[in-house]
Image (cartoon, rainbow, N blue to C red):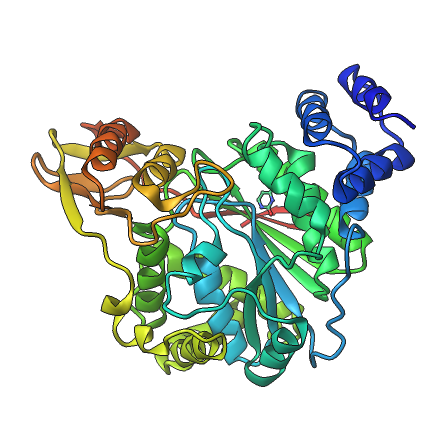
Length: 441
Ligand code: URA
């Protein structure tokens, strides 16, 4: 078999066989096929697409490109949650402690930022001392002891995805349905959870810009998960504006702590309750969405979720005192309010631009090896549908560098559209997709 022929076959719009896909994935993983040939194949896939059979073959080849994590030593039904990538999305930091406080084992492998979107691992690293790399033994021990551990993708868990993820990030081949579905599901299959709750984002800050594409992606992932013997459900949620008010690593941890303290923004709270309730149902700890949500609400009211977050941080070497004092998180040296030049109602927020502003400030990677600045970001003071007066603060920028601040500011101005007539608030949770089909929420 020759890689050249495989690239040409896909470029010309033909279906690849399981053997051809497996040959490419294995060769990429062991280094015998170079980055440039895989990049060319990814671009061919981007334009020609992959059918369901090919997507499943790619998922399975990547899932089996390294070790499969054996979680049989963890008691109970292990439920994982994964988002397709958003801006300001810190739900894992809220949902994880809530469901773990109710005894559901959360054994989660998370990612770093991808493109304009943030990643849970980068966010957690803004907590002083926090370790995102643990041995498998420690990881399992923590889940058994405190019901929660979140680590980065280990070197040998779906290593083909790890390499491909980094390559796609710099070759403009992230936002393709088959590539996203296989990337996420290969990790979920390799990391040993019994059930998976997926949060598929749609809108200007998502990789899937339209609701139809998001539903198609959700259906594909549910099919792959179910086919692999995992109880899988997907929620399609709105990413036409950032989730919550904070965008940026330490700022998002701060907002997660406030949320666990009962002072979170409404949208973050709502999505956390919905995703958490589906996790409880999958774990056999709730019979309905309403019952699940009620149980989760109690974990906020009685502070058991906040206490769980502290336990989790300390078990991974971090400074648990941040749950009482978020001033312990890294802080930017420059804080600048952005003032609205007109009065009206917020009509549109270009959410991928907000993600790019955070990246420009230093909060995301420009190259594979960039060091990121954990303290920078944006605080949104207004969301879609809100009234704004002339000269009222629309957003606050947190920065450490004047040049970057200037570039970020120019870009932020262009991300908002204000209307003189009232604008409706946006619906957050739109669809629920299970193996039985798609249902409006
Ligand atoms: N998250 C992933 O893990 N992979 C993708 O391709 C997109 C989001």
